[in-house]
Amino acid sequence: MRARYPDTEGFVERDGVKVSYEVFGSGEPALVFAPTDPLVHSRAWKAQVPYLARTSRVVTIDPRGNGRSDRPESSAAYADTEYVADTIAVMDATGTDRAVLVGLCSSAWTSLLTAALHPDRVLGVVSIATWAPFLTPPSAVRTVYDFDEACDTDEGWAKENRHYWLRDWRGYAEFFFGELLPEPHSTKLHEDLVSWAMDTSAETNLLFVDAPFSSSSREDTEAILARVSCPVLAIHGREDCCQPCERSEQAAALTGGDLLMLDGAGHVPTGREPVVVNRAIRDFADRFRPAPQAAPVRRTWTRPLNRPKRVLYVSSPIGLGHARRDLAIADELRKLKPGLEVHWLAQHPVTELLRRRSELNFHVRHRLDRYGAGRCLDYDQTGREALAQAIAAGIGRPVSYRPVETDGAARAAVLLSELI
Image (cartoon, rainbow, N blue to C red; front, side, top):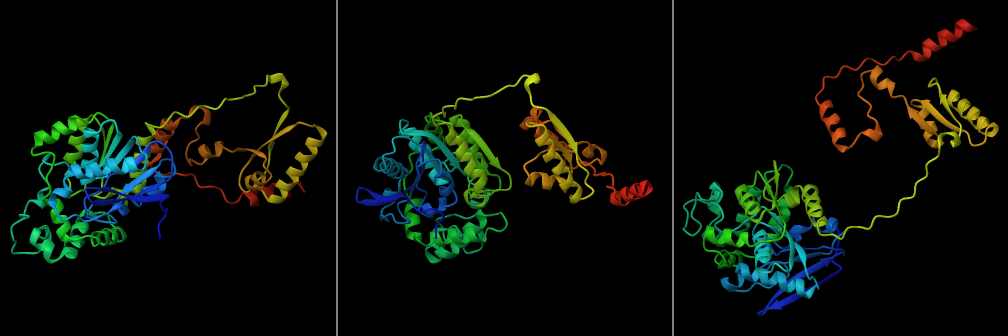
């Protein structure tokens, strides 16, 4: 079961390797999710596709080595330039002239490298949990054990080891994704990630690890990033133990891009914080949408002497019987004075009855001050910033509500009895 199924799907073939893709929705700009490394496949974007396909044509690509794509058997076939070429080939096959590229971890590097090598095809790049070769030192936890040497333990990060991968691929996947998801209640995403890793093999992922890079030093990587001329948005979770935050910070600095840091998020905010990530991608893509043509506005202004007569009807909250009586009086008033506007000053439950009758009701704003229950802001004079400031000022404010009298009906009855 999928939240949204592809409108079209297909394969491109390069040098005998078939790469699968899917296309969802329509609209510009197109969003192309660059192929990840073979550890997972394009279903990793399942929390992004349904939302973003409402306004853009979304293209996802299974990486060579996982999903429906082929598994070539040489490390050269997994070079970063091959992933770039796959991305361009899919764009050609889907008629995508230019697009915003989105990548996570290694596919963030694929997106940035594509922008550097094919600037005419890339409108912008969203780089999430950026990986870039040699850009910064790796996370400290990933340097304790040597990847190639056999370890005398299988505990913790010792599992990130060539020999352990070949011995227990599932064991590594379960450990690795557990470390990548520091957020509570990540069980379903963890299950998904492990399942997608089981669609490939340790041997395939070792070919990817041994594949050549376009960069052989930090200076090379910085030079490549400096060639990226399109807008860039880097997104990174501060609790990411897979990729240091400094990599996204450096990528944003070298490309002149924007940076969004997510406090409390791990390596996969696309799965654990999809609302924040999706809106960030959508807002970034909005930069490249054609500006909508503003519809003509027609308004009417009436000079005071020509305005209809109005009455303000103060309706008692004693009971709904009184409210029905007041509504009947108002109906008769309208008959006697055609065009008369009746505005109401009332409170619950009378306001509910007025709402059902579509009457104009003025809420009793002075009661807010009377009971210390908050504050009232003028709609016409309150923008988003002022409203946000008012809310922020109210948060944590000591509560000192004046008790609301509950004997109103009894007191009214006493007053009436004195008149009888």
